[in-house]
Structures are given as structure tokens and as C-alpha cells.
Image 1 (spheres, rainbow, N blue to C red):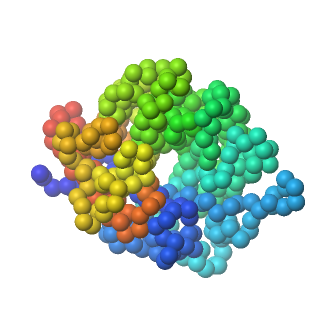
Image 2 (cartoon, one colour):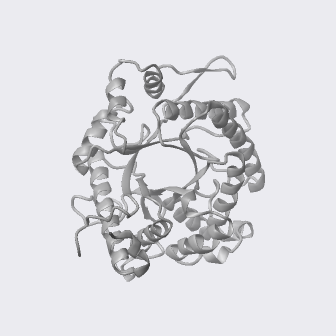
Length: 391
């Protein structure tokens, strides 16, 4: 293979890491957000770059319950303190150094809506209001730290298997309208993203993702899509396992029963174009290891395997993947590369891995990044239509 120095015309390929204070990878040694600087330094060392790429998911409670159904802002929340330090240009440590480290012009940061113990669908009005106010606080954090994007969930922590789906969606859309109005009225500069979720949350399928994305974009015109590949994988698996209960809800249900990579092709080639979703509408991909019902493992590894001791199965021949239990990562990664390259869009991949230590996460990110760049070179070398990418 030729050198991996990509043409300046090639869309930028970046692989980042999601960090949540509810994750298990740091609790014995580092805290979030107070020790973010250590995460940043390890990332820079691993990738030999000053550019950072992280998605921050605050799960410490933004609100404290008072008497009855009343809530007050939790000013001891470290994420609130980080946002306040950014807003006030404070010299308070460690937040000052964290914010300074985030200033590299080529770095990318996102904030993910808080979801733990959140439920906009709750029949408890105080829980519904807490969820909305907590989302406001997370949006303000994104604004104050000059995040590039913010990820919205239409539903949060609870699964409602037996509640009419159209009623759930209607309630969620009313809540999203409030969040969209808050975004517009506050003059936030970050790009809002809608993420597809795991059934029975929504949007769960390619058809539902396209429809709800367009409905939400009517409320927030600059909305983009965060296409979560493990969520799409797991929703398909759950629906197939529960076909008798939910088949009537899903147009083209038979497509779900094809291989996942074929289902993804169908989304890119049929559903998204038919619904007016352009290449520029997909801002970000979430990726994790998909093994049966596990979706936040290391891509290309099976449960219990380590990237330091086992080779990531990112580029195996198709026959080596069992489509009933694992994602064919070679086909999936090639598909998203081709889609973005054809649309001249950057390829931003965020790894969501929550049960591993940070050094394993970093090594996985490095290997996935290296693999994507190798695949991009191979695609260009074997397809004349990509000749524009080379000088």
C-alpha cells in the first residue's frame, strides 16, 4: 500500500472518544470533569497531536430536589463549575487549565444531553420539568465552553414497551419544541444533533430516523444527524426478536431481516435520499463494538478481549463475521467512508466505550483511526470517480 499521507482534498478523518462521568473507565484514578486535563494529555500522547476530539456527557445531577416537586440548581456539580469558569473567564483551578487545553483551533468538542435518570415522557410532571431544565443546563455548558455540537435524545433513560408509540413520540416532540425554542432564543452557536436510539426509544429504524429528523428540523432548521451505528444495530436485533409484537409498526420490516450492512446500504441509498437527507446532514457517527446485545464495547473485539492482546477485527473478509451476532465492521466502515467521500464531507467517528479503562479506549481509537485512513486510501486507489481527491 502507498503512503497514508492523504491528499489535501480528502475529507478529514477523525476518531474521538466519548467521556461520561457515569462510565466505569476512570473511577479509581480520575474524576470528571475535574481531571479532564489528564484525559487530554493521554489523548495527545497517543495520537501525537495537539488536536483533541471528545464528546462530554455530564451525568452528575444538574438539579437538587427541594420540598415537594421543587428543584434548585446544583451548584456543586463540577460541569456547572466548568461552564461558570468559562463564562466568567475565571482563574479557578483546575477549570482554567482545562479550558485553555480546549482552545486549539482544530480540536472538536461535543456535549451530549444528560440521560441518566432523565425522562421527558414521565407522567410525573416534576421529573419531566427536571429533564428539560437539566437539558437547558447542559446546553448552556456547551455554549460556554464553545462546543462544536450538542447531541439530543428524544427519549432518555426509561423504555416504554407497552405504551402507544405514536403517543410517546407526540409528547417527546412537544418537549423538543421547547428545547428548540430555547436554543434559538439563547443564540447558541453549537450545531444541534439528533441521535437515533435503541427500540423502544425513538427514532429507532432508518425510516423512523429520517421522518423524525425532518420533523425536528422544521423546529430547528440547523439540526444535523448523529447516526449511531450500534443503536441502529441493536434496534434491528430487538425488533427481529419481537417481530410478532411490533412488525405492524415498521414499514419495510423485511429489510430489517437482511444483514446489517445491507440494511445500512438501504438507509443510505433508499431511505435517506427519498426523505431529502443529504450527505451534509450527517454530522457525526457514533461507533462501539456490537456483539449480540452489547453495543458499547470496543469495535472489532469480542467481550473480554483487549486491544493490547487481540487484533481488532476491522478488515476481515465477510465470511469471517457471523451476521447473527456481530457487525461486519469492514463493510460498515467502508460504507460510511464512501458515503462521506462521495459527498465531500469530513468523517467524524466518536467511539462510545464505557466498560473499559481509558488506555484501552485510547488504543482502540488509534487503531480505528489508522484503519479508516487505510480504507480511504484503498477506496481512492480503486475507484476512478475519486480521482479529484488526489493532487
